[in-house]
Length: 464
Image 1 (cartoon, rainbow, N blue to C red):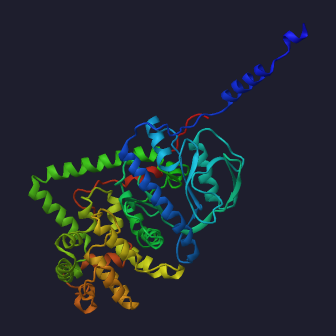
Image 2 (image 1 turned 45 degrees about the horizontal axis):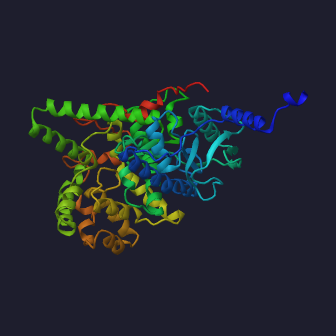
Image 3 (image 1 turned 90 degrees about the horizontal axis):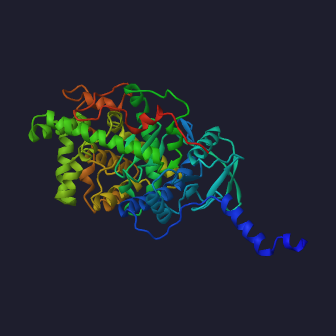
């Protein structure tokens, strides 16, 4: 009779399977379903960007620049599809191997982790809520001490934070791929930059340029508007996570607000002609008045050398190209773009990079018509860039990069410039004093932008 009550082998196996199913969390897999192809393409561009930038960020640490403010970085970037819609989660898996867990999407060569690794434990901390895991990772990063992480495959790796110059280089969320924002703590760049394949040196230029914008324009931006009122905010997490859903939705709102503000400004300007005049006035303010006559001459030469369409683009300032759909704080940042160019040029060679990487990136984006970003140089920035090339005997190489155009078209002679005391030269002083802060142009959104909003947005996470 006892044998009637003895569990059989099949019963034990069934019970084990049932218990295992109850204890195993199911994560999204690519089941082959149709997904949003635009989102998929944006995610792939995001992945290319992260894989290019993360090693470059690690390279920038070798500067050990004593003259800059510092931020902590990690040798990896991570993403999660936590809280995204089901179809979108499948797109994340298909494009980047990312599911609801913290997933490595880019890594420096010596990071110890590779793309696709799932982080399930951080220094003994483990939560199902990926937002809480991100907050813990951000906190440990900013402490600066090495700490262990464990992957889903059971591997334990020690992550070592490292210091770089202030100014996180981050990318637009995949649902708003064209979004860009400039702040002294972090800049967000659009995904179109990574539609072409960029080189390691071009990625390094992006990183150094972003850090240079923080160093050279930070005081000016702070003078215009300063606030960091809450310590634990969405900013800390967004500075770490790639494609964070909360930041993506916030960026979507910010883009809509910018579009509404631009539309309202155009309507208020009483017609298309008046709106165009207001845009031209904003562009004029961005240029240093002292170089206006010379820049006009450069524009004519550029048009002859690289074609009418390219010449027209080069005559447009950054603000004119993006339709003024950026925050007023970002507008202030644009007054330091040329200073960021010089900052990156002065440093990239020190860590084995090519100072002409800024020019090759410019030409690559220009050739594909991808001009709504900070790395396509307008005429005035080209003039200044060519001066740096001439000072370091790289003028022939620069001419070759710029489609063989005569370097004389870009050679800035100081004697051609009117003095700062001449009438109309007041805006030239912007590059000499961080205290000089321009008023926002007509049509700017009038807000601090997404980054500034995240600094004051408390991080809310769900239950475990």
